[in-house]
Image 1 (cartoon, rainbow, N blue to C red):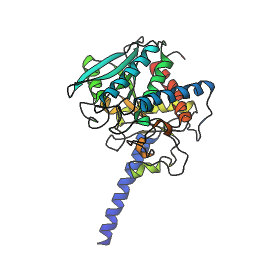
Image 2 (image 1 turned 90 degrees about the vertical axis):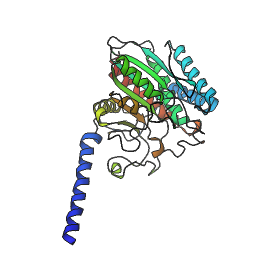
Image 3 (image 1 turned 120 degrees about the horizontal axis):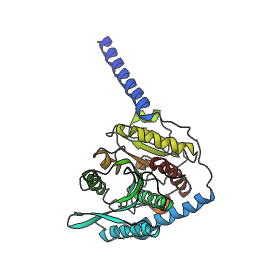
Image 4 (image 1 turned 90 degrees about the horizontal axis):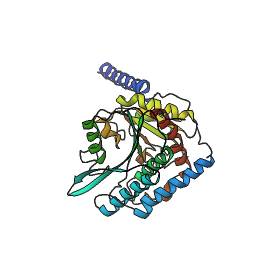
Length: 333
């Protein structure tokens, strides 16, 4: 009896060890030298910080909760994004579909490149029912608008497309009614050559408190820090090359700690944003995130307000993403 139990236990341990080794080699082991602390802000990054603060305040403070229940606020957010694109010379386009008898709009701004390949940067602008959505996802939209301002008028080899998606939150989450799913489906039907998609999702909260970072699976805690002072780059196995390339460029700038993972999409959190929609249509896509509920206690709560964000480190994330996009879209430096 005991030898049989011992043999079974050894088999389980061996299987777990093998899984952890595979995760390390294929999904967790990332290139580039990481930093341990955030860098001081440059004067440009200080200005960027205030832009981010202003846009989060507009979305989560002035407009507030925005979803199909708060339909007028949802449209107000769409108009704010359109106006923001227009002010920097982008021509916004509404990608519209009908949901429950109401028009819903993905908002697109594009900078045409020399080649047909597309680098798409996206973020959802709706908020959960009952919440103002400062971090989820006012932060992602503020980052999207800041990057659009940064690249407006700069022509690269690849087309650069900025898209604000509607209806990411429940009850539309991971359904065909999700704004990004509708958008990705139309891209596939048109034959759009999306070489890389970056989903900006809850990017503004950081903490230096011990044990402030949790993980969706116990084994991941072996590889990653327990302090929530980093930004995450997350993809599925199919998008592993994109994760590795993006984090390598990001780390080379030494702005803020970063962690990366290319993991099975069934692990909780890995597919929890608009990158999922692009995976369903065969496109490589990653999520840039502070990991949301795994560190942020105000996630999907009425207390997710603009004052909760760390705008210094948020600005460093967006600043670091600029060079990632420069590389992916082959833009002039």
